[in-house]
View 1: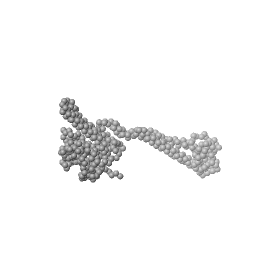
View 2: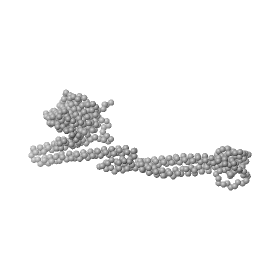
View 3: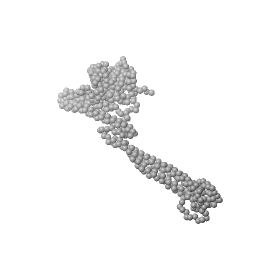
View 4: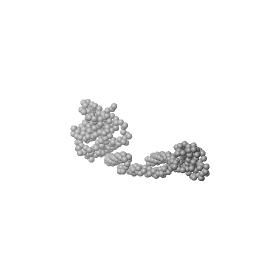
Length: 468
C-alpha cells in the first residue's frame, strides 16, 4: 500500500473497529454482570417484602390459572407445610437452603433466594433463562449507541485524515506544477511542522538547481560568445588562404590559420577544464572520492610547470621553482632554449595537502604559471614557491609584469573577463578555473603585489591530515 492516505485510513478504521469491538464486549459483559446482581437483589427484596404479609391459601384448593410471571414464590411454616405457592412448577424442590442458590428443575437452571422469618420460610425463584434474556436485552441496548456511532466515527476519521493531508497534497501539486525554467520556491506558509523541514529541503534544492541552471546558461552564453569570434576569424583566414596566389602569401595565411586554430584549441581546452572544475554539490557528489588523496603539492607543481617552459623560453622569461622557506642551492635546467632559462630545485621539505581530484591541482598550477608568463615582462622573471606555513600549504606565483590594480582584483576571477577587451593572448578563463579548483579543495586565493614588481597570487591549501 503506497498511499499514505489509504494507509492511515485503513489503519484508523481497523483501530476504530477494534476499539469498538473491545469496548462493546466489555460493556456487554459488564452489563450482564450488573443485571445478574440486580436480579439477585430483586429476589431478595421480594422475599423481604413478604415477611409482613398474611398468606394462608390452602394448597389443597385448586390454584387459579398461572399468570405470565417470571417469579415463583413459595411459603412454608415451621412444620414444613406449604402455606403459599404463587404457581406450581413441576419438579420444584421442597428442601430449602437459606440464601442464594442455583438448582436444576426439569433440566433448566433456576436462581432462588430463601429467607427464614419467624415460623415461616419464604422462597422466591426465577428461571435463569428469563434472567439471561433480560440481561442480554439490557446489554444490547447499552451497546447499540456505540454500534450506531461507529460508522459516523469512521466518516469523521476519513474526513479528518483527508483534511490533515491537504497541505501535503498542496505541496505535491506545487512540485508537480514547477517549470524547469522557473523553479520557484514552494510556499511554506501555513504548513504543519512535520512538513516544513521537507519543504525547506525542497526549496534549498530548488535554489541550488536555479543557481546551477543560471550558471550553466551564463556559461553556455559566454562560451558561445567567446567561440564565435575565433571561429569567425578561422573562417576568414581560410578564405584568405584560398585566395592567396603567391607562395609567401599562402605561407603567411597558413601561419595565421594555424595560430587561430591554436587559440581556438586553447579556448576549448580552457572551457572543458572549467566545466570539470566547477564545485559540485556534496549531496550529489557520487563522483567524488570517498576519501581525499594525500598529495605532495611541491611535486605536483614541479611536474606541472614543465608544460609552461616552452612559452617562457619563447619570451625569454626566467622561470624558477623554490620549495621550502629558503631556496635550495642545487638547481637543474628544465629547458635548454637559449632565449630563456627555467630553474627547478628539489624540495627541502614535502608539502602535503588532501585533494579530492589530484589532476585538477596540475591544472591550477598550469593556469597560474601560464598567466604569469603571458602577462609578465619580456625577458623578466616568474618565481613559483611552495612552502608550509602554520597549518597551510602555500603556493605562491610572482611575476614582474604590470600587475592588477586593487579595485579590479575581484573581477579578474569572472569568466571571460579581460582587463583589456581587445587582447587576444588569453581566454579570460585562467583565474576562473583557478578559483573553481580552489573552492573544491577548500583553499583560499589572495592577490597582492609581488616583491619583483608585478602580481603575486597565493593559494592557501589546508595541510593534509595526519594518517594514523
